[in-house]
Amino acid sequence: MPIPLDPSRVFGAVLLATLAMLSLLAGVVIGLYGKPSQRTNAIVMAFGTGALIQALALELAFEGAQRLMVESGLSGIASWFWVAAGFTLGGVLYYLSDRRLERYGAALRHPALAKLFLSRKRRERSAALLARLARVDLLRSLPPEEMEEVLLCVQPVRVAAGETIFRRGEAGDALYLIDEGTVMVLDNAASPAPHGAAAATALAYLTAGQSFGEIALLTGAARTATVVAITDAALLKIAREHFDELLDCSPRLRQAVEALNSQRILRNVAALRGQRDAEDWQKIALANIQRLNRAEEAALRAKHAAAGAPLAIFLGALLDGIPESVVIGASFVSLDSFRFTFLAAVFLSNLPEAIGSAVSMKQAGFGTRRIFALWGMLVLAGALAAALGNVFLTDAPPALLTLVGAIAGGGILAMVSSVMMPEAYEDGGPAVGLATIAGFLVAFLFNFV
Image (cartoon, rainbow, N blue to C red; front, side, top):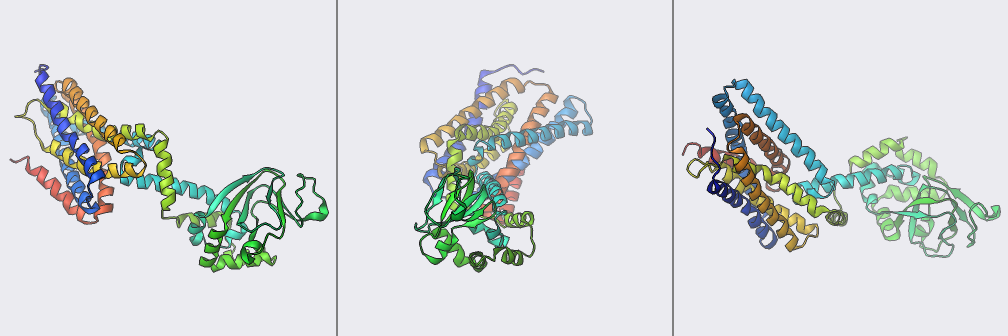
């Protein structure tokens, strides 16, 4: 029998959804102005996760299947397929949407996602740089395990054909590695035009994979030659202070540089690397790049925060929160019949999520007003979603209601498993397993009282 549209019913759904979403604003306040321990936040998040899992399993999956069997006359297997299809579709939609939004900085809304996103970005940059460094004989003398420190010191530099990179007599301020192009080493301060240098002044022509400038760095003396780019060239520069640190930390690098100075670089490199080719060396080196440099992490956060991230973060937060509001709105008919288990689970899970998100967004350079504005808009969007869910789904056919609820449940479950659970375990350790069980059992208890 159709349920007539009742403004007070819609208002009740909006009120309940708003109540569940207000924990987001409370979490933002705690995250920005309080100092909750990561462990405490993780335990609360794990408890809310357990409650959400219980609500998804019973209130969305099981009760949805029962609704189809009772009201539509479907068999148990057919009902299961409807629920399974909805959860699968919801999870796939969440996954695809989340991956898409991550490209624009939406990962900054969660600490766990932000760490994974920034780690992946740094790994991509490291792989590209290692592919270039693998062509440099001098650096292939290093064990791949030591390349992490080198990556932090390398600065890409481009020079035009005919440009003087440094002159004889200048202070030795950097070591240069040739990535692309050709340079000429001269025994005087002349800077001839490309292809026009007198043969008598040329000491050497260096190409991709070779290095220069190490003599002045090792001896502390002035540059002993002038180096000019013959073609447009891409160089990798390691400044003096970083070069000295690398030599102190790596006897093998010092040995390779000294071998280079004595014109025995090729033989020494072959012995040191054990005939390891550039591709294998790059793969092993990349496998050992494990930590984020703080300065680089801050730069990546700032970059993605400035590149349209506010909208992406808002859309990502919508992706997390709207399915919950739709479920609350669609399931509300009256206070007497409404089961508050799901609402309580959403409230509890939102709180630590917002705490961590506020901290992560602050670290990315977002101002306090912008953070509150984003989460305030999310509360309003959640209220609107609950209203629409109540208007269009409360009286929907059982199959549609079950399918929509299952799609929402799949999205929520994907969010819980990919964001909340990893984040809780990272900050809380094995104890979050017990907290998750506690949340599940407390939520399950409400089915019997």
